Image 1 (spheres, helix red, strand yellow):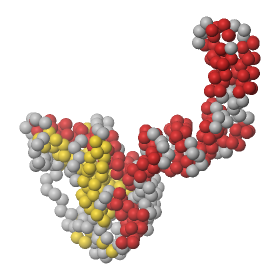
Image 2 (cartoon, one colour; image 1 turned 180 degrees about the vertical axis):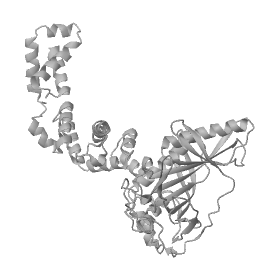
Image 3 (tube, rainbow, N blue to C red; image 1 turned 180 degrees about the horizontal axis):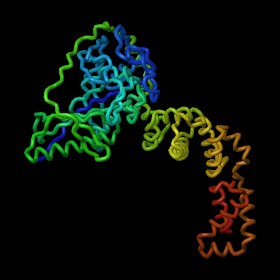
Image 4 (tube, rainbow, N blue to C red; image 1 turned 120 degrees about the horizontal axis):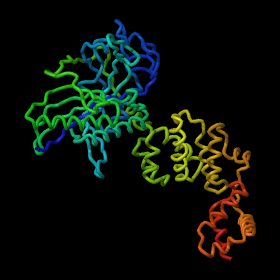
Length: 474
């Protein structure tokens, strides 16, 4: 019997704001434990929440990007449960009135476009972080209260690949909108997956299994594929699927049982009494949308249409919002857009990857890369000189034009000068013309090597090769 997977995703996105969702507590990843928290974050009696304006703006921008209906009235609720990572004993969230609802996202799978319906997007606060040791657990309250948006899809995904592409598209939206850094490895974007299976052609949903806290695109795909296989094997053996919560084991590449679910947890939701409903004016919502940075799809279209880049290179540049911004800045200083993309991908990214450097810490200004590309395009230097200048730029961040002059890196393109050099080599090696007429293929390379040696590699190879052939045919 063949089975169909039914998959829904819950994505938690940590928002990039200066302070927390309901307090003035600062946010800084990697800070010393328990240094970025204030009494509100610790659930101290008498503390009162205050809604983070930027977090609301961020939620509006993501809701709009996901084609959602935006609620102009903000309502918050209490989600009550007692756990060690929840200081107050409850979480402030949006249960009954999410800020965004009834949206969709389109993904490309096997050359086809699939529209994925999204149920809701709501704001809430993050919990603190637990560090488990052999016989004790330590609590870091720095993460407590960080603004989150949770994006809940409808159960419309059918494979691990579809789920991966869906999460990848969400990550593109939140990073290019400057809502989050989207770093899954740091927990800025986390995903819970709900997986069930059913025989093809049926509409009744199977028993749902949840896989918690997946923190990479590949883990999401692997966990779903494993879970579909595991559940299929159980049903074929006549065994029931239990409603469980599982985790993904990276080493074993399989899901591991955490706990079995019996009844749904009663969180005893009720309206948060310390936050009055907040009405968002039309102008506030419109301004949040209009001031949103350029999103991935818009930027991709612009890179293809305005810069005339090929799609492969454009997507490499857009694989990181900081790469795209660096390229955009450099493009204001040159019209050689494809050459700029080629040099950035081959040399700049090569240097960053080799040295494990974030582009934010890259010393070379984008305008200097553009100037270097123009020198190469205008044949004022050759490729080896360009690499030599680039290596100097990395060390000094000086202008390539200044470095070119200091290094004496000038490309010889004058045909008469090159012709005289070729004649000198031929006169010094009288057998060359006869060898050329006899069909010896290495003759041209030999002459090229000799004139390059004479000039220290400062000859334009294209011009030189044309002249070498002309002279050898005489």
